[in-house]
Length: 89
Image: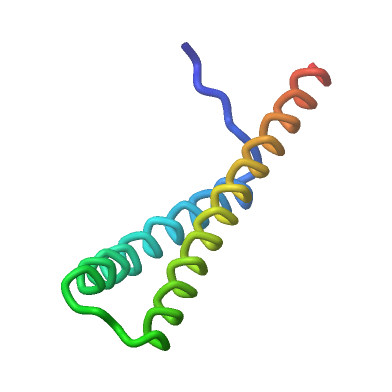
């Protein structure tokens, strides 16, 4: 099986960068979220801190969803570009 270039270099760099950002966000924020959830079970937090923690959890989920959506869109763009290249041959 022959590997075919999947698009221009800037697109590959963009996809790689987005993947790296997603991994970093997950690696940095994930343990914090897990620790907060564990501490909530052990000790009851004040309602203000609980609201902040919930909003932080929601923000992390939104960011991860948007990164995933953007990666999906870039993948579709690459597929369309490859179809265009194949059609020109």
